Image 1 (cartoon, rainbow, N blue to C red):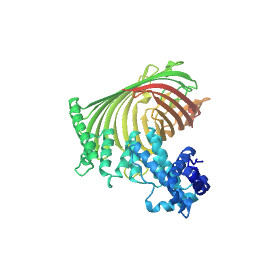
Image 2 (cartoon, rainbow, N blue to C red):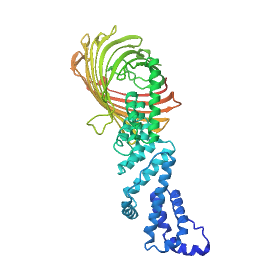
Image 3 (cartoon, rainbow, N blue to C red):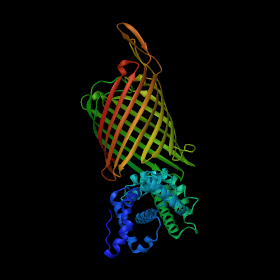
Image 4 (cartoon, one colour):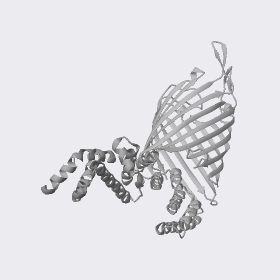
Length: 532
């Protein structure tokens, strides 16, 4: 409870009026602030400010509602001060005409939506000041869900989405401000988002609008500075032939509870530790503002400790041409892949793919971005693997959504194989499955340096031709149908801006119409990964 540090001559009058309401004031303040210490501080501040107004207190007919209104105004003043200290705007909770009704409802209902709104805004500002942008975003989105759809809140959401790298969501929030008083500031921030997404042309357009003569001086000066920087960068980029380079390296150790060899083969029912290495790199060339070329390559190797027959190596090289068309990025990709198993050549692939990607899925209000891929490859099996000769086809659709700090991505994948069958002395195995797979992946930033994730997928497979084998000298013929469930967990910790440590667990369970293809498989991997 608040302490009344006043002279005895005035204290008795003040105590007689205020003391009976202190407990109720403390409860009301706690409902505003959400914790006891802040509530005590709020009541103490109000008590100190009210004492010099003793004569005014004595003229109030209904003192308790009046005291609650004073508490509320003090609480709002505190919110505004915190907002200015965080260098970000914060909206009023409501217009002045509705404050009286709101206070009356709050006194009657300890669990009102407006109370939750005030607490969510306060928590969001505090987390923003501490640099915890994912949690600040979570509180601000809760405020939005409670009905506080104001320009200031939209701006705050745009800022935290930008700082957490969710540029599509930041763009959506800033875009809602284009028709209001903060139009120039929204245009400037949309320019920053476009820069972060690697779209300097769009950034230049937004900065140009924000630098208009009627824009506020501060915003106009910031936009003009960005336009100068873009001009300098354009000259530097031209001097560097518009080349962008990136590299990736990963070295890991793990354990596989059920080793398997060629794709879709029966498992070994044996476990082993393994080591793996991934090295990848890409080189991009910005031919024009809308056209770019990307060359990329990948080298992958996995060696098992107990059985080298299952060791796998993959070498891949591709080239992709991409063009920006309105809000879409469209592309065509060509490339080849060669794989080895146990030191022997397994297969060689060559093919083409058509690509489409956008960060704004029109007509899908629940989605942020989506992408599509249609691919076809010619496959040639290595010596001893001629049954793998044939064609492979793929269609894949992906969509992503950010929700309460989570980055969610769902997908549907269809694969079809047209391969030769493997046959030997009455034993026939089909290697031409058709797969239908759906799945979802989720990532959440616990901290700027810590990410956690989970994934789940379900796949149904049906093989074109029936399998045949002899069982007690009787020919058995059965078409293979599989259902595979996949679950995974991931956690990664960024050591610095370049290196991270990743832990991953993956579980697969397959139920097949042919018993020998049933399996359970656990894979645990710990890796050190770097981006250059």
